[in-house]
Amino acid sequence: MKRFLTITTCPIEESALLAQRRMSQSMGAAVYFSGVVRVEEDGKNIRALEYEAFEPMVQHQFELIFREMEKRWPIESVRLVHRIGIVKVNDSSLWVEVIAPHRGEAFAACQYLIDEMKRVVPIWKKPVA
Amino acid sequence: MNVHVSFYSYFKDLAGTSRFMATVPEGSTIGDLCQQLVARFPKLAGMQKSTLIAVGVDYQDRDHVLNEGDEVSLFPPVQGG
Image (cartoon, rainbow over all chains, first blue to last red; front, side, top):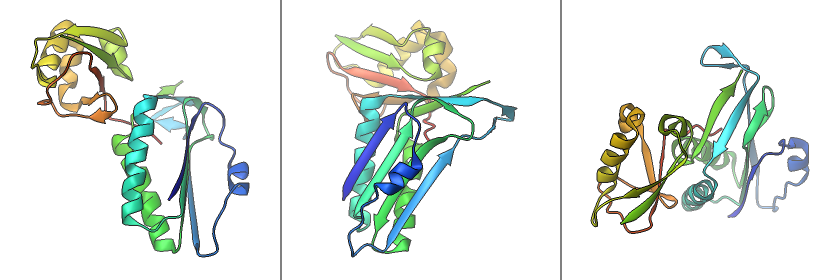
């Protein structure tokens, strides 16, 4: 399974990411997800979220998740981009893509990746009013 | 022995610092270290049940025995995405 992990302060350019997609002829499903900052956090309006990461551990924990994905599903590639620093409302803070032979395993793997990220990957956010 | 402690997210605000050098007896566990940290940084006391702890880049339990020079990180539940 190919993996591409990017932790960045730069905006997520979804069109560029989609243009870079590579799928072999035996792959039938490309599932991708974009997480976008909402205007409301804990009942209050915000301008942005500020993300902080413990980066060496982020890299390691994502690698552990990727290894588990590889065991569970026949995934060809996974790409994940996570913003850190200030991310404005309506901007994407997370972009994930999973490519697999069939939609069931692609959806399941994408869901698993995001669920596990929210459980173990040391990234935090705080609202910017 | 000495261990390096790092605080992340709002634990930095509660501790008033992002880094702290703790001196603990040989054979001390993470639980022993946490007792010392709560005594030194009382605002962390209320967070104990929700605190996540790593040594290096791996999560560890409170009964994990520390070694000289370990890099211990304490932080609240993660919130990526």
